[in-house]
Length: 182
Image (spheres, rainbow, N blue to C red):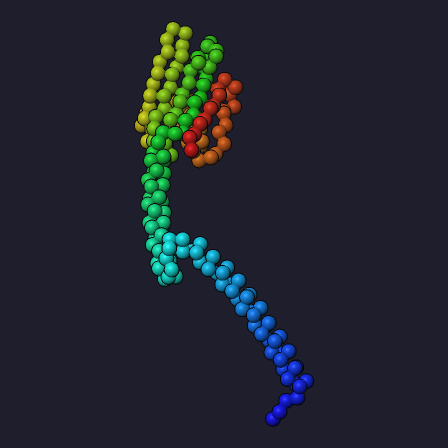
């Protein structure tokens, strides 16, 4: 089988075009390979050249992070328990203990933790003297009878913890202030 000159010329041109296309494909592949190598250099910053080694290192890091997370959760739980036992819910009721006295100089102050344990301190102011009383509170109640003002201070302090609104009684001679630390 013999080829004519035109057939040989056509065959040479087709072969030349295929060679140019092959060179372009090789150039694109080379550029992609460089890009992949750059990405792998970032991934293997520690100088490791094996993907299994990199994966094992990442697994160790993740395991260490999980352990630190569990330790942090335990610490937070312990801190929450300590905060719940702190005397952080406070309310003060100011009032006039005697009808002939003004200025609301008498007060009852309740200081309790989240469980309702703490104390109520009352100071009764009169013209010639001032008396102060302290009563222990366990679970939101006292073995000693509480006055209405002491009960109001206690319920306001416990309401400050639960997020309930704190309101004063209808008598204008009393005022309630409640605080809580979160």
